[in-house]
View: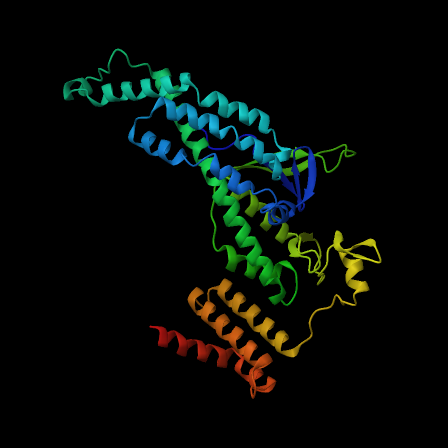
Length: 380
């Protein structure tokens, strides 16, 4: 039974991803998705080619299928491989052999074997009690054929699931990653200790099967000896992106959004960097500048906002996430506490008569949690 897409694999070691014969910083592909999602409407294009797959899966579950539908869906799925190269890591993988596998799977021969498999199963199910007691299976029963056909049917199911889920996986990962980036500045420091609670809050507890092997790889083309690395086979795109994201986070890599060009870039240090080194969409005196150069020219200092209200708010939100990750408060309690903290922050900055000193007192753990308890009781 097929449990993985053989071409969808990567090796991980020391915060780096070895894939398609190249090496990248862990977190690179999560950042790439953030930039690429709207670029060529890859998710939408893939979705068009899988719209009828659900109907085929439903009929397969029941135990029948229309030959025209089976062959037509196979042909439409081949169009997916025209869009996949726009999205990393698919442009680095052996999609040619995968396309050939899909083409060879949705054929008249496969259709014939699966339908014959169902007929043989039906004959077995219709055996009398006496035949079953004596183990007298029908003469047409061929054990080797039944195993081959069953595995073929499982492969069809797996392939449909993988490409059906691809669009949803891209959307789910994109919106979660974008949410994580929007919360980053609430962390006191940009390291694993302070970013992990935010990541867990955004993604929740996600479990997915990943097939692992330990292999030997060379750190570089000049290395003479191999070192141990983990080779992972992914059942879906979402598991790949989350693995890339959390592997990167473990080594201090995380995506950021440039405040000049609005594109995302991968940070590999705990610096509070606001701008990337890419080319700015704006020119200065007719010359192109990097986003960081343009920020300097425009007098935009790359410093953390030292506003006392924001500083107090960030620390309290960081504490709420820490307690949530330890399990000392519930997810609902944490959400309401953060909601109140956000309201108090807005009031302290813009509201008349609400002083910074009062805000500081209201943002203590005891005071904020008392307000949280009251609001939760009001909502019950």
